[in-house]
Image 1 (cartoon, rainbow, N blue to C red):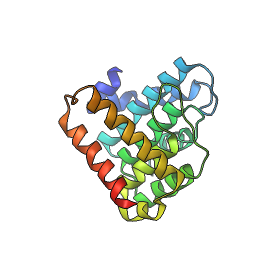
Image 2: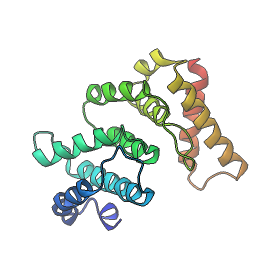
Image 3: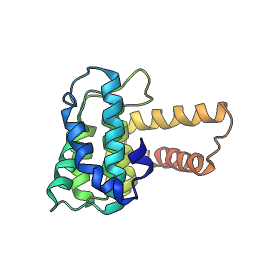
Length: 187
């Protein structure tokens, strides 16, 4: 957690190799075992993404490339919260969109992966990231199960926020409402 909060500091960059080695020592990402380990791995994805985003991802750097490959592999994990975190990392790292887009399209075609404590499916998250990166391409998938999953997910989150009172972060609510509007107008 400390690395995540200090991702823009030089000490975080120097800790990245150790963080990555630690994450690799956890059991493979595609197992459903131990939610605690998956939670630690999710924080590792988040911290690695934040650090790489601050220093600038360079796929010619072997460490960066290995971390990128690890994150892409995790997008296919059976653990939905872990996979979703990795999918959002694809967006945050700023890789050329075509590389990300191909992986997102692959993920959208997978069976839905969800978790009892997680609203939505991984294919919905993949469609959400595609929509953010390339609205024109996302329009080709209106009506696709991933589109339907995302519309249900965003509607559910929106309704929950509205029923509980407007969240303190008005920008997040505005972003959510814009996404909901886009989803309804795209049909």
